[in-house]
Image (cartoon, rainbow, N blue to C red; front, top):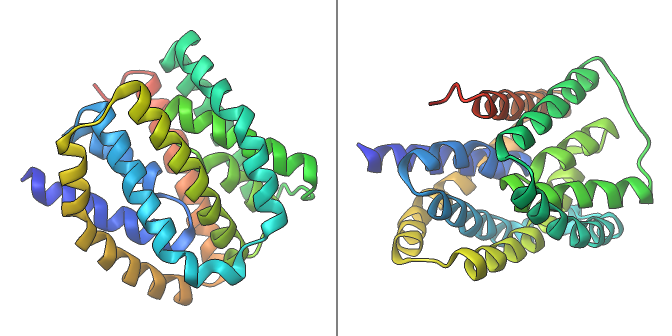
Length: 241
C-alpha cells in the first residue's frame, strides 16, 4: 500500500511541477513525510525536483529570463543562511504559522486583482525569501509564485525562469542537507525507483502545459498557493496529528 501511495504522490507532483513550474515540493513533501523520515522525505524531494528541472532545461531554455534569474540567484545566496538561522532559533510551528498567514493574505490579495510592477529590487527580495524558505521549511516556491503572479508574468516565462532557478536552489540545499544531516540508501534507492513515474509525469505535464491557457494557469497558481497556506496553517496548529 505504501508503494502505491508513493507512486501516486510522485506522479501527481511531477505533472504539477512540469506543467506549472511549481508544486513538486509543495504537494509531495507533506505526503512523503507520512512515508519517510523528515531527512529522507526532504532529500527525495530535492533529488527528484533537480531531475525534473534538469530534464526540462532544453525545452524551457528559450523561455528563461536570464536577467531575472541572475537576480533571483543573487538574492537567494544571503537568504539560504538566514533560513537556517530562522530554523534553529525560531520555533518551527510559529515560523510555519507566520508563513501560512502571509501566503493566504497575499493570495487573497492576488485573487482580488492586486498587482505590482516587476523591478530589480523585488527580484532580489523574491530570491532572498525563496532561499530562506528553502532552508527553513523546504518550500522555495511560494515567494516566486506570489511575485510572478502579482506581476502578471506569462506562464512560459514563469515556468522557465523558475525551473532554472530551482536547479541552483535545490542543488545548493541538497549539498547543505547532506553535509549537516547525512544521507542513506533509502533516499537514493527510492529516488531511482521513482524515476520512471517522474518521466511519465514529465510527459503528461508537458501535454497539460500546452493545453492550459493563461487564465487556467493563473487559477492553478491560486489553488497551489491556497493549498500551501492551508497545509502550513494546519500543520503549525498541530491539527495534522
